[in-house]
Amino acid sequence: MIRSRQGVPEKLRLAFLGGAVNSAIGRAHRDAIELDQKFDLVAGCFSRHDDINRETARQYRILPEHCHADFDTLLAKEAGNIDALVVLTPTQQHTKQVVAALKAGVSVICEKALAGSSAEARMIGGARENGAFLAVTYNYTGYPMLREIRSMVEHGIFGELQQIHIEMPQETFLRFRRDGTPMTPQDWRLHDGVVPTVSLDLGVHVHSLLYFLTQRKPEEVCATSQSFGNFPQVLDNVHALVRCAGGLHCSMWYGKTALGQRNGLRVRLYGSKASIEWHQEVPEVAYFYDRNGRKQILDRASPEIMIANDARYERFKAGHPSGFIEAFANYYADLADALLQCKAKTTRLSHPYVLGLEEAEEGLRLLEAIECSRLENRWVEIEPQGVRRSVAERVEIRAPQMAL
Image (tube, rainbow, N blue to C red; front, top):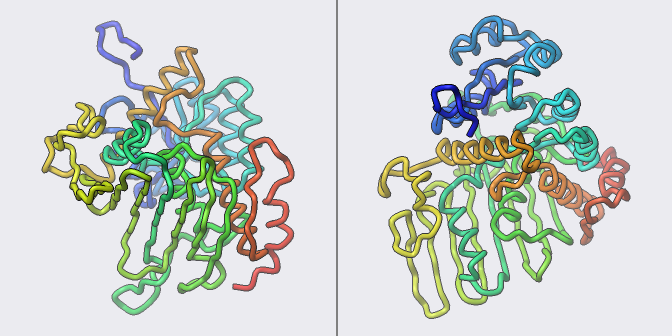
C-alpha cells in the first residue's frame, strides 16, 4: 500500500456519484468501504435534490465544500483529489458518466449494471485508452463460501462440470403494502430498454456468478420472460437455459414476482464426482454431496476448507455469521488492492476476484441474447466479443412490438 510519512498505510480517497441516504444501495456501499478501512469517502454529489444531497453529506461526514450540486462540478473540482469515483446512479445514466470520468483520467468503480447494452459497454471501453481503472461491483461474489466453491472448482473437486443452476427470485413487484396498495419501485425501474430492467437489476448478478464460479463463457441461450406483477409495462420474470463452453449446461431463473422470496439467491453446481449447494439466506454454509452418497455441511470451520477460513474473512470466528455487508466489504477490499496495482502501473485489472469491462460486456451480450430468444422464440447464439453484428440491433427492431 501507499505509505504516509509515519509509515501508516494511506487510505484510497473516493467520491460518490449518487448513493444518497434515501437510495436503495448508497448506505450498503458506504458501510462496506468502512469495514476494512482501505478507503475514505471524501467528496460526492449524492442527489439531484439539494436538501437530500446536503443531508447525505452531513451523515457521511463530508465537508460542505466537497459536496457538489452536479456531476460536472464534482468531476471538475475533485478529479485531482480522489483515487476513484463510485458511480451509484441509475443504470441508464452510467454510460455518459463513466465515459466522462474515464476521459478525465479518473478511475471508476461502477455499480452494476455497467451499462444498458453491450454497445454502450464498448463505448465505455473506447474511453479507457488512457489506461484508467474500471471495475464493476458484483458484490455477491464476495461471500467467502462462494469463493470456496470457486476454489473447489479450480482444484477439480467436482470432476467434470456438468450443470449449474442459479436462481435469484424476489417478490417486490407483486407485494402489497399493509394498506393494500402495490409496493412502488423507483421510476427508472418501470421502463424497459434494449435489455429489460429486471435483467439489468438481477440478470447481471446471475451471469457474474456463472462466470465467477466456473470461468465458462455462455455460448447459446433459449429463454422465456413474462410480466406477472403489478407493473405490466415491464418484464419481471425470466427463465433461461444456457449452453456454456466446455459442455456446461446452465439454467437461470430471476425475477421480482416470487411471493415469499425476499432475495432467494441460490446456486447449485453438479459435476461428475460431486455437487454443492449454497443459499444466500444461510451464507455461512454450503451443502456438499459426493457420488459415494456422502452428505456434508461445510462452513468456515470445516477441516476441508481452503479459502473461506482466510484471516481476512474471519471478522469473527465461525458460528457468528457474516452476511451481505461483509461480502460487499470483501469485494471492496479486493477493489482497493486492484486499484493500488493500477496506480503502481503494474496492470489495469488483474485481481482474480475483481470483475470489470470484459465480464460486464459478456454479461450484457448474454442478456441481449435472452431478450432476442424471448422475442424470436428460438435458441440464440451469443456472439463472441468483438463481433459487431449485435443481437441488440435485432432487439431494438423488435422491441416496439413487445406485447406485455
